[in-house]
Length: 165
Image 1 (cartoon, one colour):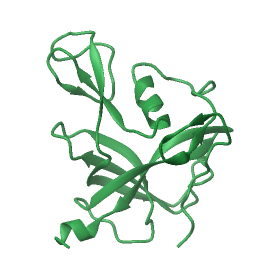
Image 2 (cartoon, one colour; image 1 turned 135 degrees about the vertical axis):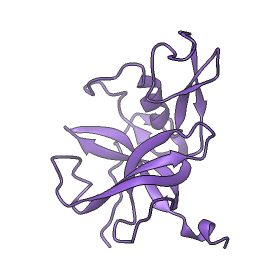
Image 3 (cartoon, rainbow, N blue to C red; image 1 turned 90 degrees about the vertical axis):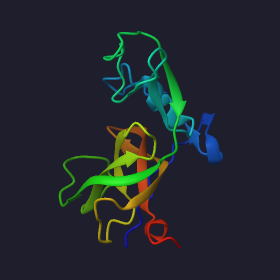
Image 4 (tube, rainbow, N blue to C red; image 1 turned 180 degrees about the horizontal axis):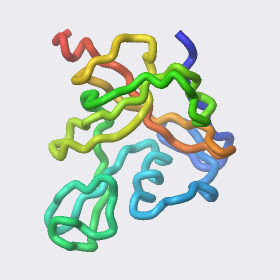
């Protein structure tokens, strides 16, 4: 199996677990309502948006709640654990991060929070059989894209949980 670790940024700001981050996406485009999500990944945590008024989880993040119309939101830390909702094995790199050499497995994970929130990521054991419903645990890793270090979710299969071991 190939080494699936991502690069870690050089210096600047300490992260959970002794990792370091260099910037807060000076060149990353398209950050809007989801900027606190990316900032939380830099802090070594996964935080998702929840409406402060009706408590609905909003993902992708929004500026205004679609259920109650509130503009007020909070960002709650959630556990990076869930089950594979969907997956695909990519045989071409499509110009993505150089750490993802083909073939690799992209997964959509439905988190174990009661909101059925789904997050994207890459499976670390890309040479194993993957099934929808497989339990996984996530971690935050850093990858290089367009000469910038960005955080990304990496997921690990936890089939022993499914078997009750």
